[in-house]
Amino acid sequence: MDFQQLIVQKHTRWKRAIFAMSVMLVVFSCVYLMVGDLFISPFSALSPLEEKLLIDLRLPRLLAAIAIGAALAVSGASLQVLLGNVLAEPGVLGISGGASLAMVVVLFFLPFSPTPEVFMVAAVLGSLCFTVILVSMARAMRLTTARLLLVGVALGILSGAMVTWAFYFSDDLSLRLLMYWLMGSLGGVNWYQHSLTLVMIPVIIWLCLQGKKLDKLMIGETHAAQLGVDVPSLRWKLIFAVSILVGSAVALGGVISFVGLVVPHLLRLAIGTDNRFLLPLSAVAGATLLVFADTCARILLDSAELPLGVMTTSIGAPIFIWMLVKNHDSR
Amino acid sequence: MIRVKSIHVGDRLLPLSFNLKPGSVTHVIGPNGSGKSTLLSSLSGVGFDYRGCIQFNETDLKDISLSDLALYRAYLSQNAKPAFSLEVFQFLALSVPSSAKGKEEEIQQALDEITRMLEISDKLHRSIQALSGGEWQRVRLAAMCLQIWPSLNPYAKLLILDEPAAPLDIAQAALLYKLIERVAGLGIAVIMANHDINKTLRHADQVLLLEKGVLQSCGAVTEVLVPEKLEAVFKTKVKQATVDGESYLLFG
Image (cartoon, rainbow over all chains, first blue to last red; front, side):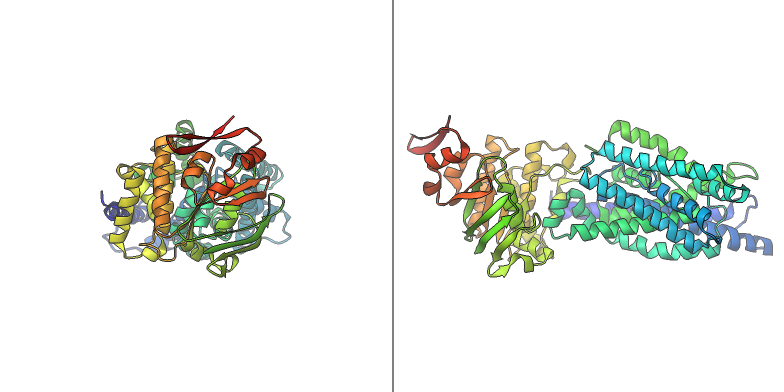
């Protein structure tokens, strides 16, 4: 068949998928704002209580879900290209663990009570540190898929152990904070914390625009370099961007695993691997998934809520095992 | 004209010089570990940190930006399949040079000719994960050709191939040499590492004989591919025989 025609056909499919997913995101977001302990009907006038509920609680929480979902899915998709491994994911590889570890350190060893900005900087530094360790090990030791995952999991266990130590020695208040991060929850997000979102948005957009270079990098580093991509500089920019996103996501909602793995993977299976479209679509689909998961987390139990991170892990872990067993796409 | 002046890379490649004329085919031969890949990747500008001077028409390689370099030359390295599944046409689309923007008809023509010569025109919609080693190699070759095809890219000068025939069977290797001839006919200099010395005998205009990073001999086929020189480098018995008027090298 005609070459140009094949390409145009593929692009049309991607654009349709992005459109459909955006519509879904809007629908799910509306549902999200309506349901809860108090059902808010969009067709009647708002009472002062409903207005306060909507603006001070549900809206910031919805925006946090969208931002975190988009950030995690996009960073998962970029990490997979960066490491040449379809199973790479910030949660699985312990990068989120690095962020939570850094936050624990800040919580316990800082003489004053930390502000969201301090938490965010700490979380970004923690994830940056773990990402650099992983990437340099993957490159220097030429780690295979399996060993890279093992190293990542080990880093995750290490950070988990440190956090558990902190658990053991903490008083009641910091214990609650720790639980909040470990399980991942959006329960306490307020407008003030959305200063983090303002940092995440430009980074997400920048990553979505790297599709063309990522497409070349996906084939292999030498091939990308011979096609004119400055691989070392791109690699460091990607590491930095992913660390900012994961760090901010952890600072905002705790450790939420598997979004970055499941979303890009299922999209690759369904449509293909064209990073120019895969990244924006991952962002929208990740946001949709997290809005959906948080809706469930809020309404599944009467007058209580499930931790969001536990929700996504329960959905994601079986899919991860299925991918490992099937060894899909991977050498 | 591409001039290589006393380039060297650590102790893997000791100073050597040669020229590549437009439209000529140069073969680099030598035992494993003799520095063939090091030489080719230095020449591509993406590999080792070489010392010395490589000039593309009077411009030093180190002064050319990576994106311009992608227009000047294509470099087929020895590499494995990526972990991701994408379709062949998507892979080929990545190699369409930036100078071919809007030239859709030319792209289609070039692609038709290249894929026909390599016998992969029916594989454009296949996933690269489903290709055999020989098919994948031919798809990669097609991408390299697309990158420096003169009707798409008027700046193209050089095609570098690192053991392009390694995963190919005899019939596919014949397609490869036909394609190289065609590319050279378009005025592109081709340099390739090769193990099949009888193919070098048949198809090369210039031969570089490497041994442990040292250029032992350089010149036309008749000067370099003589049994004494090959015996000294490959440490094996070499005989020249003539069958049906064609000369062959036999190794013992």
